[in-house]
Length: 465
RNA sequence: GGUGGGUUGGCCGAGAGGCGAGGCAACGGACUGCAAAUCCGUCUACACGGGUUCAAAUCCCGUACCCACCUCCA
Image 1 (tube, protein in one colour):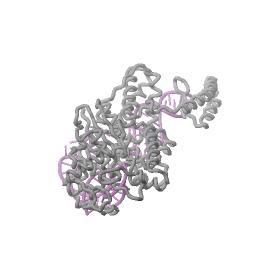
Image 2 (cartoon, rainbow, N blue to C red):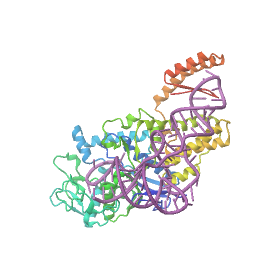
Image 3 (cartoon, rainbow, N blue to C red):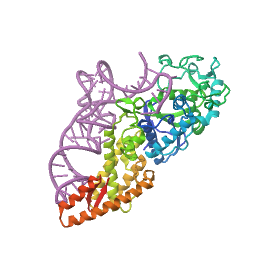
Image 4 (cartoon, rainbow, N blue to C red):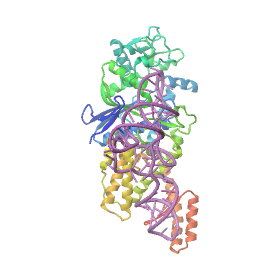
């Protein structure tokens, strides 16, 4: 079995052949920390987390670099509006992002570099580009440095566009540019900007342009050539096109494969256009658990557009609980078991991370497991149980993963509720033994009114919220 | 204007020439004191119009509608 990935640069799904056998270097464009993370933002993180977990499960040694853009125009604008330091806003939003990602079990990257910590590497790269004749300092004395699009014939190769067909940036400041499509590598400091948002450089004080940080940091941590570069589809142009042009013009081969995840939209529109905050992660997590939100995202293919709705999310949550219920009910009946991935699951994941088909395999194992469960403990049941655990681990959806462990206070609360409910259930069991059905049902209704469901199982009554 | 993607059953969501993904909902049956859960079964769809083929949701041509990107974006 070979992993195949859809490379958006060639628009082909092809075998994954790493530069170094057994190792995989991945660079993913993370977020600009300028506002609270919403459902759309974390999809990318979940998608690439699945890629990373699958490579690890397949035996690769994975270097996973995900950057965080901690200085840019938007951060400066928003912080000015809010009357806070730009770095305070960036740091606060970074903490929110970390919380959101932890809540959906996205593993921390191998390293998470930020632009502000890599100014020397960025300056070095810009100097290389100037030396090679692919960049120039603006002649208007602004301190800006631009990439010279016309000097790089391959410009546009990633997105198959011809420079002539591109619309010049209507809103971009054309001063000092040789061509309207040239983009900033370095932005000279302006008097309207905080003095803290500038670093020394050969072109005067200033800050990095948006695209250059990724080229510099990918180069630093993964080398001039690496395996996979990922991000959202919207980043293909200009961000990734520019990253590739800069890196290759500086003599670095850059990424072998480009992977792009599709959007989650609401009301047919991208979320950044949507108003309101109901889609912020903490709000969504009031409706479903983190593991259910992750299941919702994993059950669609990463290249498929998802139209977000709470109805669909809650439906996904129900589907996931079916899997969870099986594990809960099977666990006491399972003796020895070992984790092994079914072939169909491996085939699905190897086929460009076919998580929908992989999830279908999980459900098939669950159904088979449920069937076996009726006959009591067996080796076959242990196999199904192990399969389900192993598959969920790959998807980051294993309920017993400590990442999902409830906080201490939740644990305490569960104990308290359990003590109360057990008392009522004992009374109900006594009524049932006396065949006093009216009394038994009245107790069940009373518990239900508090939001707790009671189920009778061969091993006695069970309750769940 | 240029580039890319989409339209699948009541709903979500896969598939990419033949061999009915999966889930949710609904309905019927088994089990149950009644339920719940579980299992079995039912409902069997591919925007529209042509074409290619023994065979098309899948390939080709055309049409309609939707979305994304074209220097702020996951």
